[in-house]
Image 1 (cartoon, rainbow, N blue to C red):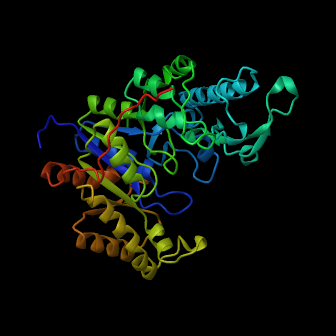
Image 2: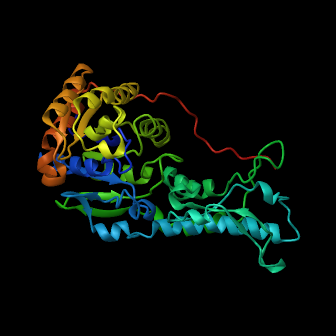
Image 3: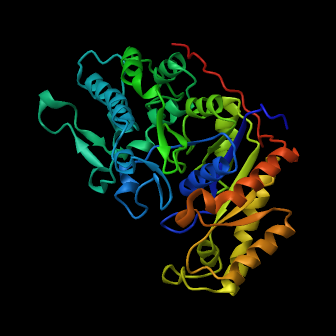
Length: 402
């Protein structure tokens, strides 16, 4: 591999199963530290935290221990304001819909019973998921059922992360599918507010540069959830990282059966990206879970359960190989992991021709990920990986006839 070639490493795809997650973000940050420790010019590009998980069981999304980005408190508590802009753009459209219902000259003829577009807020407020609005009399709108989603679930967030520039963003924001049941064929009314949406989101198009505890660059931009969207940072941020470093570490949310598929087929397909390596994050406690351990037994050593649960990790490895990438397995180490369990996982990974490494990023930072960083570089330099999406898509916006 030529030295001047930029390398993208997808290191956030996780064998995720337990409520607290398995450490995609922290391993991504730790790998970036390790790459810089061995003399590589590396940048980590991550999603921005949402206040929902921050105030939930998973906590903040700025890393942990000696593998975190700073200022951690500000980053977790809306350091950039991008989420607030997403909320405004999303809710601007919601207000326009209800204003159109209120207007006697309703030229869209929307049936209020079939509107699926919801408002958003960046908080897990279950009481607002399903509500009734417009009950303040004739001057305050048409009564109908509505609700709030969390901001990362907004389609505006997903579109921002898939946009290549301001014009692409404005064009996509101008088309929204509001009602699939009103008429036989879905319709997409184009609001004149497209320009307003573009202006609302103009500033959030700028990426946010922060740093790790070891002073290495980190870019945070965008934060869609992976269960309802693509679950990766913006295309713009990833390409910005590639323009600044020789190695770019990014992450994909959820398990490799979901996060990898969306990252490879959607983001890489549309963004013209081709990762050189993939790091599969796994934990012994997750394997215990897949082997039958209950929640209160996740931290109890059991080679039998790890042995039974390895089938889950085995399938994730197979999924990654379908994209032409043999993963490097990163075992995110916890204090209750035994040598016997770790060695078993390493032996099984070796049978699948995968290198595996136990990480001590939490207590050692970059020093605890040197081995992983070197293994990733070796895979990239060997040229054995040849990325190929599992599906071919045609990505273009079509103008609908009136």
